Image 1 (spheres, helix red, strand yellow):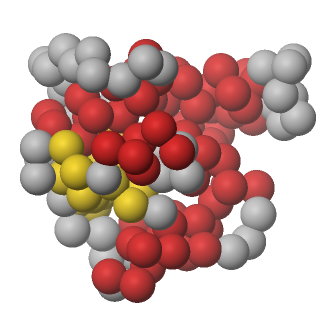
Image 2 (cartoon, one colour; image 1 turned 30 degrees about the vertical axis):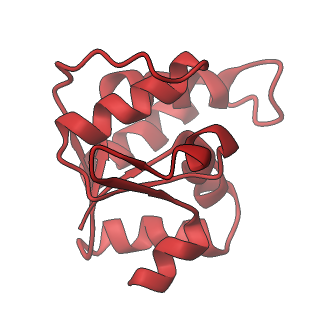
Length: 133
């Protein structure tokens, strides 16, 4: 299974135990193929180091996390340019899913979840994804 994990799922899996961490562990064990892109990793780094967010990691701490995600994931070369969502970050998720030939996008983002399916890629919650495994 080829899966794009949205930033909100990654943040939950990085900082807390629970269902999102289970999905990251599946990627670590190579039971799923975790797809990401340079843009999605940049977004994650911005969230991790932002003074306006609760995490406030140093750039070095964020780099350690990103390096680990690069090791367990597949970084997609993005060629698509999608603009179907109001939030630009959501379009980057869709681009990664299309160019990475994803089966699923796993997210907690209501705007993406409302789409439901995009070019045969299911957009589902963490719970729904774990039920499919």
